[in-house]
Length: 198
Image 1 (tube, rainbow, N blue to C red):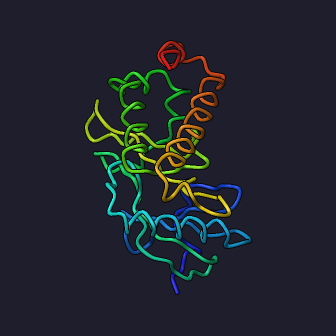
Image 2 (cartoon, rainbow, N blue to C red):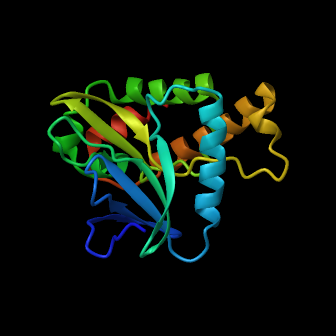
């Protein structure tokens, strides 16, 4: 059993806590708060993607399911910047104009993320500004990484296997994501101007 009581808490969601793995600073553990349903759904879908041998260029990789003293856990890559800092969410950059200016070609990078999802058939049912990080691979360059919200909640998951329905579902969630981030209130005028391109 993995002991997390003294581990660094990275984030808190509605259904799970996320801790830095005390045995590996490049991995994290998502722990269910009450029900294991979120872990069950995410594990099932990510194992499906693994069998498809997709690219993990913009998606954190699942390694294992692990019992912890805090509850049922899933072990993932922990997304870090080139300087070792934990990567920050899109929301952080939306709210901080000076930091946002460090992202070259913001809109192109968003389009790259969208293309990745379509090319690899990755359904993100709850894509938001909080579960997409910007990983800085150098001071002024980086890529977006999806860290949560992945999965297909259809009772009969036809979108996993039929490309036409898969593309429709990805587009539905992507369009909702863009509407959501356009509505975010921020004083970051550079971001507001750029996001209107979508």
